[in-house]
Length: 339
Ligand code: 5MM
Image (cartoon, rainbow, N blue to C red; front, side, top):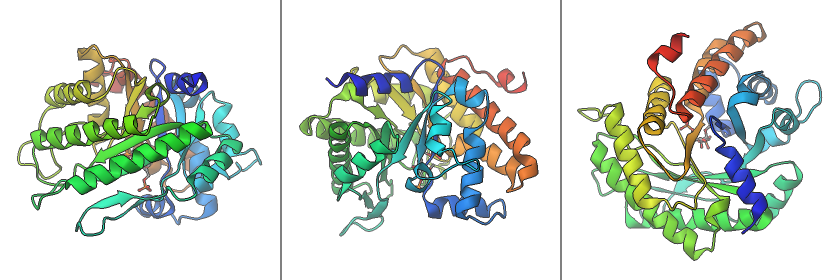
């Protein structure tokens, strides 16, 4: 077992800590900036992300790792300090998204397979030089009444995740494996359970075949949740119970940590669900967050692209980081939001 990888993975899920997912690709961050009427440029992306990484109290106390896009890992703060150093100075690990995105899966309309394995060994070596300690690869699984997901989608994505994870471990990065079952659709929570179970069973089978050491990995899954257009929506306790049940059925205890994506849940839903799981269940792994939107949404809106709003935006980020830290400890309640 590679002890260094195991140490980093364990530190990512230290009690009350979780990950800030700030790895939006250029297209996605433009969409986010469009919502606040801000032009996405190299500098505006740098200013926004630097503002988050320099949020005192949030980073040091609640954030163990930050997932970056390639551009950000190479960028310097306004004062010339590499952004990776700004992050590591707070005690958090810089991480890197290494996939090249979800691309159409030939022969399977509406489904994708995540690409990016070509040249990955060489990129991992460079990212280690640039200071990254962990990596992330996101697979996207769609649910649809037209037979989605197909076995091809589940299998191809799990296979790619396992090949990515093995290359990362060989090169010295902790792989975060992210098989995201999307919330999009009118399916109920039990359909989400069934598809999540299938995706996770296939993933751990492929990780085994690829000889990935589970102690040096982190899982980033979706929660088991109703589709966004579902006629009835499962409540917090049902989401917590079914999510913990599927994870206990599929994820070996050797995995040190599970950090959820937020997937389009509201900020409060993402926090409430995580807290209910940690408060109500004994689990063999650390259970925390790796949120993008649910950590950044309030801060992005408060910032609005204006330097004069930096204090308000940092206060908004600090608050969501604190609330999700409480949730990772199972200590959040609605009252916490007003304290
Ligand atoms: C932050 O968004 C990440 C990058 O998305 P694109 O590759 O589409 O630009 C995304 O992978 C993210 O890390 C996860 O989906 C979790 O983010 P959310 O917003 O679902 O918590």
